[in-house]
Length: 232
Image 1 (cartoon, rainbow, N blue to C red):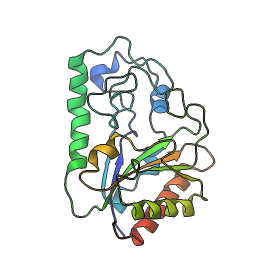
Image 2 (tube, one colour):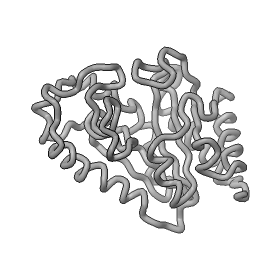
Image 3 (cartoon, rainbow, N blue to C red):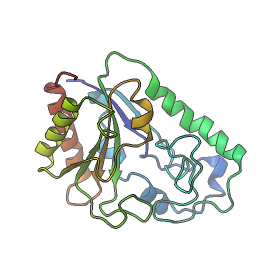
């Protein structure tokens, strides 16, 4: 069964582009810790869904889940990681930042915007630290196995969201929260005009392997698609 889903995995990349590599202070370990560790493996089911989009560029360099004009500390091109580690030897000038966004940010969002009758729902897929890092809305809190976000009830029909939550509760032993600690990021908010969207966050807790997490996510998404409720 090919699931009628568009899967977005914007934070799985580990590559620091050559044009800024000599100015990056981060070790490979720090680059990985700022991104969504395990996401590349957990969401590796391009052959099971209608559309699958990801990137190899590190979140610390270009955050595809931020608005293009967000030049804050935790913005689209950050100054510090989510662990509050400085990223750049010297600040990046506007020309360099704009070049990075033209090469990596703009094409990714253009791909997500492309129309397609084979897709009924977009799923923006992430992993989250099991305990919230210093640059987070819930700093220091222990997080659930799963967080599903619908932008305050605006990004997909309520019946769909209820069914999706129930599907994940069935496969993750009930440890699922709605909009806590995340209410839905930029990808979800920007692209909900084109189709329904939901944001999915999985804890990076080591209590389950990446293989097991992948299987449970696929099971939950398959359950949802097989019993897709009627839109409101």
